[in-house]
Length: 509
Image (cartoon, rainbow, N blue to C red; front, side, top):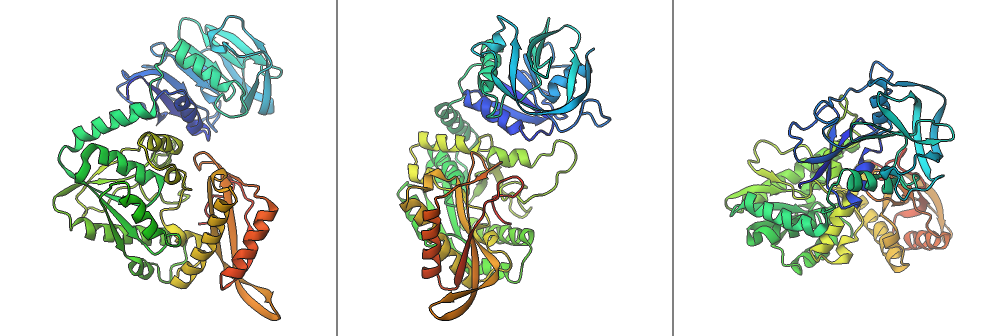
């Protein structure tokens, strides 16, 4: 990936969004923590400094080493980055009288500035800071102001350095993508050559060179990531790819056979292994979500290890790791709290003497789908909702039993099939049902019932980092609730989850 853009992460929630906007311009970029700047900067054509929850005025201010960047590479400093350049280069940053957060409009734009080509006066931008630049750094030239922020944008003369106090990457900054394009394409002259076709060609060539005649084993999940990884590898090494699809007993209803049939039609070399009982035994009596995840992970590794030993001379393990998994496993400052374990990040036990290959580790989810389309994968498979690695175990709150799994599989099937039948499935990013650890009183016929409660969850998102609940039609929810209660024995109450992420997560565990 030549002609990269380097994005330095200072802990902002928006850093990944900057990367996504840059990628949308068909420009390859990478995110690194501010204190782990690559030693070889020769492949980078431009650098972007991101935002941060920290203040440049505090003792905890984050100090990047810009000695090999500033004045040598085109530099765009966003929010914290803009304040950092001002505060430590002859300017002044002070606390704002009021926290500057939310929508603002550009009230002044300096004429004939390439950075603001095709950006009109009054263009809306998104502010998110409690400090403000009161005095520009040495050789700083004001480029734009809002009603409340005098130095909303500036450049430093004698350098290709630009700085803005707002966030161009968020949806609310109307011309934000245009500004990023002006900086990267017109000012920094970064080529726009990062396309799905280019990725496929380059990755297949790289895989051929790296793997040669070695055998590779891949654990398929039926999801988009592992499927695209499999097809990429198959294109590179053909029959030397051995795929294993493990039934952990926690898949959706009838999914094991239907996915096997689908893969067979794609020409992949796939072996199905039904290890349901092994997983149920490993989960017996466990209630804590992290313990359940670990038990499933360990059982999967054991099954996978058993099966991979049946293939002679395997030297590589392929994984469908994608870029958000990689980024989330690296903390910007100190250890970050574990929200939940990533099943693809963290390595393998020592006894599995396999090298790892991850062909998708630099792609976001939407990019994986575009690469899959380039590879000719069935749109129905590419459009599948994400499904958690631990399967239905983290949608059953409390301990796991085969009986509970069957109830949830039946509920889930009614919900997902209903979304498809009513033309709603593709309008939802992820949907599923959750079996709650409570019973409720109900009436069926003339009899009192005391049965399970299920929650339905449907969210819209682009990458799962943030998500909003979907406003499904009341008529649809009424029908699905009716169908579940009438068709699934053991359930007498259905609720709909209207929490967004954050503060909630998409899954309940």
